[in-house]
Length: 413
Image: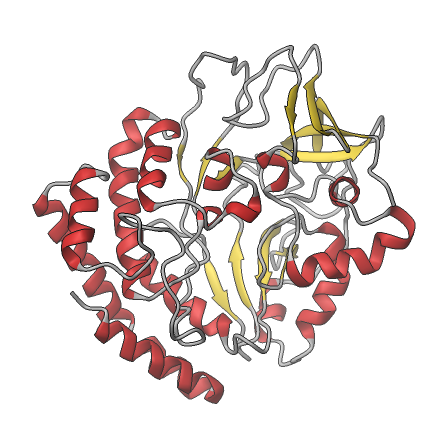
């Protein structure tokens, strides 16, 4: 099927906080997006008062690009989720990117929603389970059921199988917004792996969403951080978007470039802490041998971009997003390397190279670097009991846990 002519782009102003709310969500029409053989064309409405991205301030002139703008590419489903979407919709709606965005509607990470031209964004309301039912299920096929049921409401990127869903908070009409992930045969026990790694991230003082592991080890569940405590949607942009790169370019950058991104887009008063946190995350990824810490796995969040004009700084506070998607990849890929380069190389660096990165690009003093190293080392030691605990619960995790223990020891500087 050919390209869809146009879709409308909306900004979500509220999200549903309870089941069956009379006014569950609202959106404001902001722009129109079209794509043809000549490329993509994004045009703000004349009355638009809010920008869709830190990289696309309000202006009268259209934005033109060969591919879809990075902020639009950001949530396009990948892997099994995309396959499930295409199976369900391709015959009737087509399988091009704009069709998928329109079908997903307002069910997206961040503040953007999409709809067919002159139509309202779709929103789905289902009779959802509660979190304890998800965590306590012993059904090995549960994720396949969730994928079938929630694929059409899951505007989220990533090759790992995942869906967006809401679950009921027991005893109330309120709901929790979650990301639910499983794993494929090539990466066994990835849920337990991620649960351990994210526990280490949290233990060393970095901000993370609340995370859970189902009792049968099949599901890794995290709360969404793009919705605030008042159920207001937050803007989220990953580093691919902020560097003007498409999703396929998520490995084509350096750790040095990420520090430039932080200095360019994080609010000045928060930059020092953000750079220190990014150095800590980099050290963690090296110690845990996470070879998939690419540009899409870091980002910036903010409340809104109202009246953000070209040539001006946004008036809102922009901060480094909570840390997510940290796993140990070398138990599955023994020769894995870093996802992003450092001093031109993707080999796991020596301490002196990492120390210079902290000094020159994260603007840290030696005493601060040493303190961060101690925090990371203590967090790993503190959480190592989880590897034994999870191995006792899930026998298939034993091999992965042993590999993680070995690499943690080998990666110590």
